[in-house]
Image 1: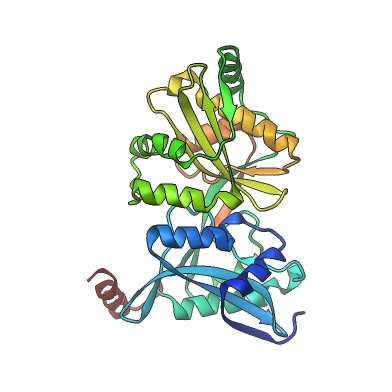
Image 2: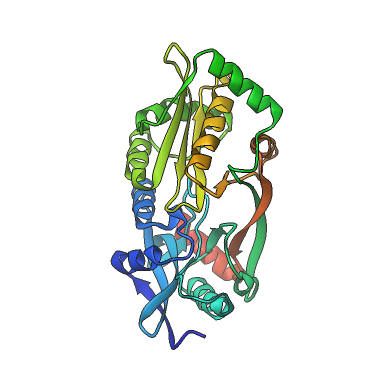
Length: 317
C-alpha cells in the first residue's frame, strides 16, 4: 500500500520524471506530445499527479480552456488516448485509491471532464462512481509477429511491389499535409486546424513518431501514415492519409504490409490501430488483422440544470 497520499498540479519536469518511470509510456501523454497539441489548438493543460511520501506515483494530463475563472476540460482532436500514467513502482492492488483521488480532483476542479483511456488502462472502477459515465470504444490490436492482413490486402500489396512501388521513411510533414486535407474531406471531418498549424504539429511530435510513405515508380505519393511510440512494447497508429484519387491503385495496402514487417523486425509486440468505432473504419482496420479490443470513454456531466445553464453561458458567450 502506498504511503501518505497527496494530490497536486506539478510542472513539466515533475511530469517528465513520472512519465519516464511509468509502466506503459503511452506517447500521447509525453510532454513532447502534450506541448505540441496544446500549441496547435490553443489549449492550456495541467499535470495532475498523486504523490506517495513526496514521490509522484500516478498522474493525468488535463487539457482545458479557462472562461471567467472556470476550467472547461477539452479532449483535443488527434489525440487517440488521454491515459492515466502510473509509476512502475505502483502495485496493481493500489490503483483504486489512487484513481479515486484523481477522479475526485478532476471532477471538482474541471467542468465536463472527458477522457479516452487506452486499452492498457487499469482499474477504472473509480470512474464508475459519483456520477461518472463510462462507455466503451473499440480498436484493433495487432501482433505483427502473429497476425496477418486478409488475402485482398496481401494481393494488392504484391501487385504494387511488382509494379515498382516503394516505401520512404523520410519524416516530411508537407507530404502528409498533401494527402491529409483530401482524407479529412472524404471522411467528413473538420479538425479546424490550418495547414501551417498541422505541419508545425507533425514536426513537433517527431521525437515520438515515425513516418511511412508509399510512392509508385513515377514517384507519385499514394499514402502516408504516422506511427507513435515511446518504447518497444506498443506502437500506435496516430494518423493516416491517402490520395483519394489513387485509392484503387493499392498504395495503402502496400504501405500497411511494410509497416507490419518493420514492426515485426523491431520486435514490437502490439500495434494499436487507434479506433474502430465507425463501421467503415472498423471493416478496413479489421482487414489489417488483429483482435478487437475495448478502451474506455469516461465523462462527467452530473450537474444541476442551473449549473448546466451557467456553464453553457460561460463557455459559449
